[in-house]
Length: 63
Image 1: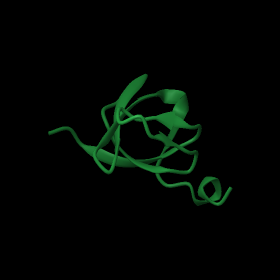
Image 2: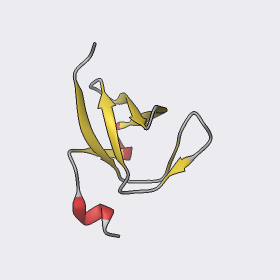
Image 3: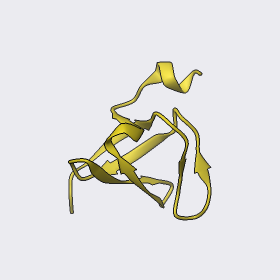
Image 4: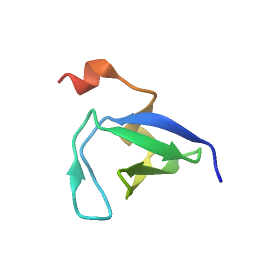
């Protein structure tokens, strides 16, 4: 199993389920590089590097 870390969405991102997650949403990130796999409550979000920030960003979540 790949190492996981937490990240924060910087832009709205649609998940595989069809739900769209707003900026500030905390995601579990797997992988490294230009694209990664991210998950929110089991929903898969394929992310590009510019769509998320590593770690939790409370200032983004408060917007």
